[in-house]
Image (tube, rainbow over all chains, first blue to last red):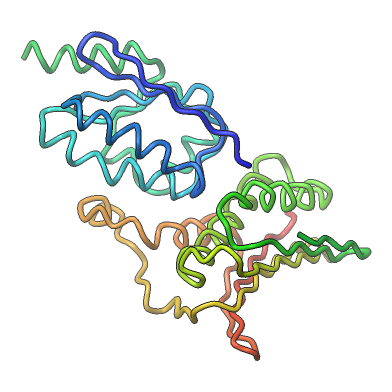
Amino acid sequence: MADFNVNVRGVGSVSVIDVKGYLDAHTAPQLENAFNQLIDGSKYKVVVNFNDLSYISSAGLGVFMAYVETMRENKGDIKFSNMQDGVYNIFDLLGFPMLYEFYKNENEAIEKFKESISK
Amino acid sequence: MTSKTNNINKELTVKSTTNNLAIIREFVENIARESGFSKEIVSKISLAVDEACTNVIKHAYKFSPDREIKILTQFNDSKLTIRITDSGDKFDPNLIPEPNLKEYHKQKKVGGLGMFLMKKLMDEVQYHTLSGNQNQVVLVKYLA
């Protein structure tokens, strides 16, 4: 029922996941699949672009919590970009800004990965 | 799926599958909107009900798809009450500690987030055990 779409693109060494629609307990497994495929391909630098995401529940938030450690252990990360206010408020309520980086746009997030490579 | 309408009471019964969450949200959003809540509060109420029903599907029914979730809503005196009833495993909310969010992220402990969100999003959250082995979560939001 819930309309959700996930698409993965490569931008240099960074993988961008575009999420679209409604991310809930029904659709969260699609996002888990995307993360599993990235890990299988040893791709650990991930930007999630939330531009077209209208809704998220704790089931969706749980996906990021489940995968972020693996990414960080492999010199990568999960960074967030282009989030609508309503969606950001839920991340904020659950304390995500303490532990994750949020960017206004995708390029800023990708640039951050480049900075950490050149260091 | 059945739906009944009274003057101030509405009811929705759906099977316990996650693909019904969208139907549940739409049902609750329409009621909250008709009750006069702002767009922002409508979203909060909808998410709280999603979390409650997700918990029922996952924990009370352990993903068994052919059980029933009943959602009853009542609006009067500026108070919207949403009752979510299941007949699955009993659940003691007192066994779930209020999460320390930093520790939570460290432990990758995902469970319990829904309950935490419900408390943040609603004015009141109560858990009841009814006769006939039924569990009920009651969510309340006041029209400011």
